[in-house]
Length: 439
Image 1 (cartoon, rainbow, N blue to C red):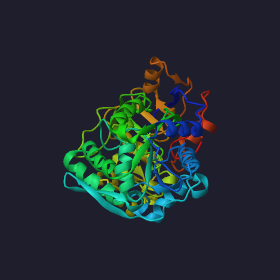
Image 2 (image 1 turned 135 degrees about the horizontal axis):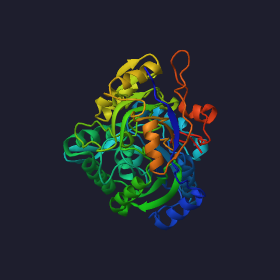
Image 3 (image 1 turned 120 degrees about the vertical axis):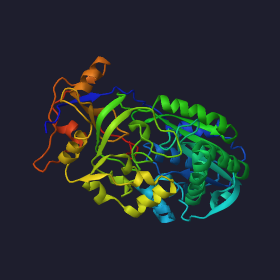
Image 4 (image 1 turned 90 degrees about the horizontal axis):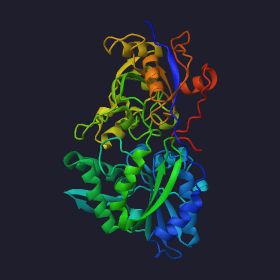
């Protein structure tokens, strides 16, 4: 098979520099946090999620420092659903993988998992960890971004952190079950209303990133304003969400997926595939075939999202922790995302299979892109047709093409390594900084 020539394309994403995390956190909590009632000796629970957010350790450390400055006692709650196997030790290990330890955060990490029922919404129980129920104050900390399972005015953010994070695995299961019946957005909103009425949820620290996954700004939102303010912050986050620069692709070759990259392994809004039977799917982009090469190191074998691909390399299946993946998919009521696609033994065979299933094409007409992952989109390799289209749109594309760098076994190097070390391109790829990497 004749493979197309590739060209390095660079999207010129604006980067944000100079954010003073500690200063912004202190000012926000002091002025907007609604924390006037914090007294010496009070217990303040601070949520720490399982998503890899580059600035999160610094943000949590700053929140802890502010709590200590008031003489109160901070406690970090591993606020996640089924991640880490849905166990207390597993979830602490997730935080450790993200560089969030008692030493780096400056506070103890809660080592128990005790969700209790605090009310109900639409006939479904609403849960919160016993630590949160007995806390004097709770500060939610999370990134505001699009959710991988649905499209709504509230997606992934502070309200979801309250429902799934404080509720732990029981809260996650209950919310997802209710979502099947009334939609994700309604389930999150209605369960969050119960939690805000029953728990001392004082405020949320919203993390907003730029298109390179770097911190763009922080905002502290009082708990009384969260239901109104979070939809506004989500619109802002969507405007700063990196995407592919094309509406239609024949083939997308992806080096890796993982929980550290996106909650569904792939960022579903990037690939245009949500694959959720009770929610609306994306209208764009339209991608005919997706070929997946590997799992990320930090996903720990969790292969949720593998079912979104059409073809996978056998190394994906070899690295897959079947039980962990099943638990995450079942808890999220998304078994489709754990289905194993057609599995092939080399990158060459993987790519050949994708090309053989897209209909008629030529090297000049093929619309193919090769990316590191769905969170690292500043630099990618594209076929001739896409290179021509990108140049017409004013994007930077190398003039010199190169062949797929297969080795004697039909395997490819990591695209990031190829761009940094071997590609004959004057366009230098920046070091990959997806959410699982610390700056």
